[in-house]
Length: 296
Image (cartoon, rainbow, N blue to C red; front, top):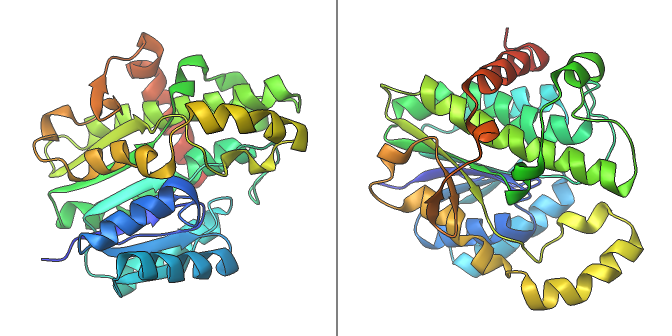
């Protein structure tokens, strides 16, 4: 039977659900690979123009007509809810949800959350929870959360979250980088707690570091920073095909069920620092996320 994946790629969705910038980078590459394998893929994108352009490219590169664009803005809780409602009404299956969207810039979401906290964590958190029942019905199914090795440098300041609904303050290069790393730690802790809550179901979940990718993640940074990155990305960064491999491994590799909740890099389960598998912090972040996303 056809696999249904939803892919979030900064605006793309999959029937295997992937959420990340599916209109660029590893999201689009992942979508093409899944479509080639016969999956029905939904590309969830914020921008209709970029999403439709990506849709045409994924169809052309994969040779598949089972690819659909659906608009989704992770910076809007209403948009996430509308997307989930439309998806559940129009699509009968969901086998794979890939939360692959990410943003690297300061600002606020439409709901007053810190932008990186709202897009990189809360949007995915809400979407996953709204689709969990369908994932359970279609099990065995999987949730894939694309994180980053940057989570090692992150912290969760709950005082700042409670006060500012953000993972940090400031607009300096260091401040923005730190907040991004904090959001990636949220991805790993979310996966850790989600695995506990999924025990006894046929849904498993995994987080991962795709590698340093030569993609468009830095497009919102200063022009000087982007120029400085050119020689580094050319020689040391993975291309998007290489960068999509760990996502595809977690999505498709047989026998990973006993590793639910684990963190992967280079297609291998890796050990985590204690802060990235802290039961108390993970539960506290979950409960805070429930309140801020309106689930409770």
